[in-house]
Length: 443
Image 1 (cartoon, rainbow, N blue to C red):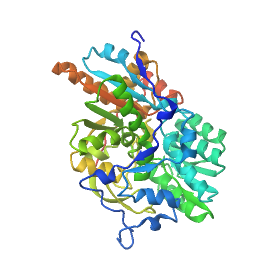
Image 2 (image 1 turned 120 degrees about the vertical axis):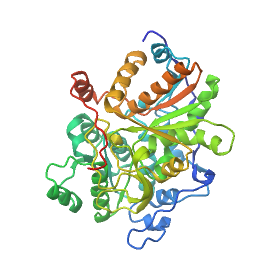
Image 3 (image 1 turned 90 degrees about the horizontal axis):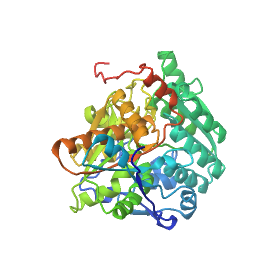
Image 4 (image 1 turned 30 degrees about the horizontal axis):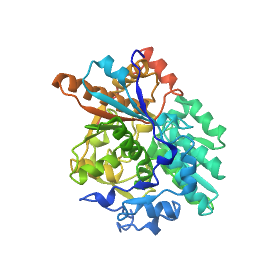
């Protein structure tokens, strides 16, 4: 690190007191979720068998722009929030770009990622309702780790279905969940009807987030006093993550700049939504013209190549039908190391925004993301998670464009997690064992 980066820090009292709900501000709102059997529009109470009631109400809330953060949740946020906003001067110098690059550093949370912002909220609402058991899925393990800590804090028993390829690729994420007291099952497994069917049909299946969701939902539905929780895709998860962008707004003001471009990596939408939605409200009001870019894997390009239609959120078809950009709920992504981005569909809000041309998306090859991650580590000192590296790669592309155009642009991206438990993937990259995995529609 030859050039010192500058941090912009807020005080504890400046942690947001309310989450931002973007739906009331959208001119064209997302279509409702549907009952797959009757095609009837769902109401909040239709989700009560699966989710805590307050979370179901947040999911369906289309009228309240601001939703108060419970004091118990804010008290836990104070452990690590507000997170730093950092001017990436070292990266700027290495790229020789006129662009000013900033990143919101969510890797400083106790579990090393942004996922704790929603995990705490979901565990809190479950505990408040008197629920004793919760289930979930996890791809790379960051969501599972976050929910494990939150469940332990609120005294909830947790079962995590971890996508099998990541279960084997990232054993220490599994260890973190177990350390916090969660039960971790490699998915697909023989413990559920959905898992048994998948293994019977394909004994070597390495799983997907859609597979793990099916198993987690099935267990929740068959276990007394148990609810399902999830780390991305749905509206209430994006809602909780807006603390990221709300803090970043204040910090950019401290820096004396406003972003021209905002970037987040994209799997189901929690990361991108968290950094983007608070700034996007100014675009929707006609006050700003910021460009928003969702950076997804080339091997799982639901935003750039998906079809906009109703689809299931899981492989077995247990979930409601969600209006989304999707590659199909039976799509099995390539075994890339960015496990948190291996999901077939996009959340309904982001899908609607993308369809209406309000946000942009790019799909990025795996090797480019690791090259970007390595440059970022060598210039900024932080080893990023493979998921976050997609945002870094997109930011580098934009910084290079700024140099070509001779224009100073302000770029903000979300560093959603560190990669200190992903070093096996870096080993493979340095050994030349990783490859790019293109999306093949014919398959």
